[in-house]
Image 1 (cartoon, rainbow, N blue to C red):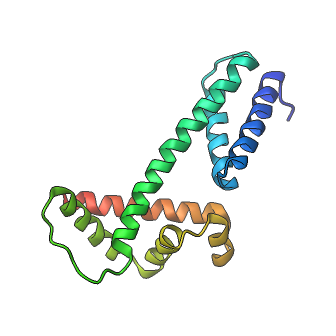
Image 2: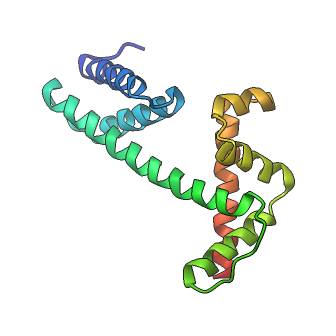
Length: 162
């Protein structure tokens, strides 16, 4: 498949953005996902932009996607640390937020051990997708899909209780 000049320009800028992200400490897998999302978004937008317009757009899209992902991961990390790490004492539920968190904890505790273990390894032990895929002997895509399904299952479980 031969890329036309515009698509080739987007591809070159995508590689540049990828190297920029990796150079600034973003994991290679995460950087590739972000760049791919931005690449697809630009191609689907049916906009024909000059290279000088394309570059800032690509950086902006990737920056916003990274910030969104970071916020989601940070919130999920907080939930995992709060409810998957054994705690020595239970706190009283005195606010609406605590009640929601208790529903989340209940949903997390109802997960099968294998799923809960995968969440702990990813979000508490902070293992990368690559490490997990090696450990489980499956591709990184399989690990990502499992994590997505587990998160969806937890979300569905706690929303039913509210």
